[in-house]
Image 1 (tube, rainbow, N blue to C red):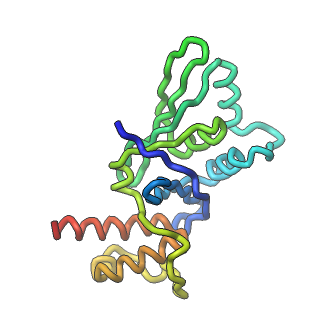
Image 2 (image 1 turned 45 degrees about the horizontal axis):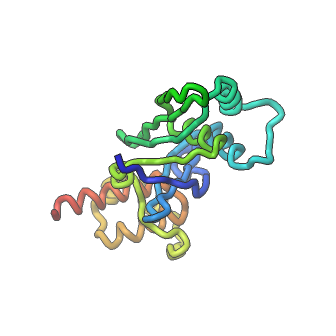
Length: 199
């Protein structure tokens, strides 16, 4: 399968889910962005994994698992985000034994998989289908500024259905600017539904 490599663009506080964060991944070639909602602990663990010079006084769960993997003569080769179902991403972590060359694939939550990948500097991949279903094609720096927050503008699915395609696109831009990726996905789904009807 032709996998698409992703890079981590950042982690921000989720505007729609209390206590949650949005992990923003990006396909470098197309600039399609993939927002993944993660918990507070996972956001902290990914951030610490990215900051190689910061070490907590006691090892986090992901640090402990990393040490176990190394001690067992395995290395983390890659992470594959292979599916999204009802807004939930499914991922595999691919390991390889340094001695026997044996490969091991473990199912994992995407947040845990990414937290492990950053500790091994391992690449993160996804499929074209996942990018098509959940990706957002926008340049954050080019988004126009709006005074009114997106969450105040769009509150229900009925509101989305009453808007024109041009208005939906404008609100999608605003949602991404405010890093409200949960709602951005909802708008994008509405846009996709309308495009399917046209086709």
